[in-house]
Length: 423
Image (tube, rainbow, N blue to C red; front, side, top):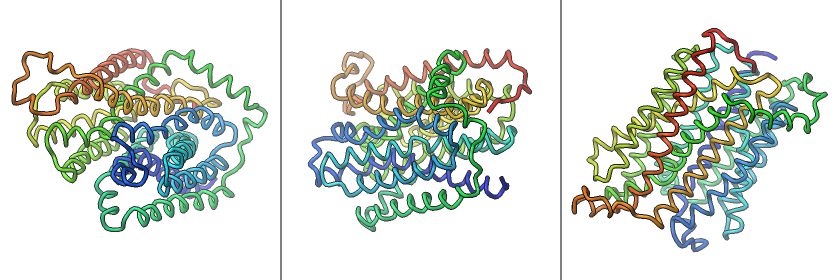
């Protein structure tokens, strides 16, 4: 296959990851609209509806990876983009809760192969030496989708309105679908796995759970992305508004500090990580600064603007460790199961995102431990202190991520620096 086709395919899947993260974060700007259209009672109830995206997104990760191993991106990507288009259109123009949830479920199915297909293309069609860079670009692209879903989306809604903005999103999705269809005729059919049945590939995929090294990577990815999709992905806006008394516009602007930091850190790690020695140190460092950041954020106190900006930049950079996690998978996976392994890791990623959003909302509604803590002053209690109880979730999972990163550090230390990947 020509290099130009490979690059074009990579770009299509890269923009698919951008669209996928946009779809995950876009409901951040949807509550006010759907509150009027379908009478959603509260932000917590709204997140229960829109987070159904993660149910099908998680469930379809492994089937999507198996289909990639069986048929490749030639057929999987165009079909996934078509399903995404249907889901986006139904969500954007839904008039009741059933249509909203159905749209989110369909979008989750379509987007389930977005990130995995991009990493699959990078690992299958390009040299190993540039794999961390390509994954870093993919992570940067997905982060860009999250950024677009904050202030730029709000500005578009203010200027164009809900319906016209939806048209732009649908046209963008349709363009990617048509582009993938145009490229598909230049992509050769998969030959090596034609004799492998889907049943056998499924059995082989589940055998990956017996690989302890992969399990560590999966769990690290879960803990890291649980925070990403729960904190900046949804609840950070409310945290800044209710705890630090920010206006909506300012809160959305500050969320972008997190996303831009994650984007730049992902690109940086992609550029500097070219062997296992650097990878293991980068993984531990990312997890360590994340844990330190959430110790600070979980401490009940009202922060100044500069402190908030700094801590959001640091916590955003720490999440870039997921780039390292994905780039480690080919070292512990056979070629025939590469797509399944990447999909399983992304299953843990998106399940973490779903769990984090729901868990934070549940703790926020039912628990408040900060009024039991003696060192909180009356001035600090003026803030909505229930958020500090929920913030302890991030401290817990960032601590677990640090432990898992440490374990991976010693496992990869026993491997040779030049050990080749199998994907």
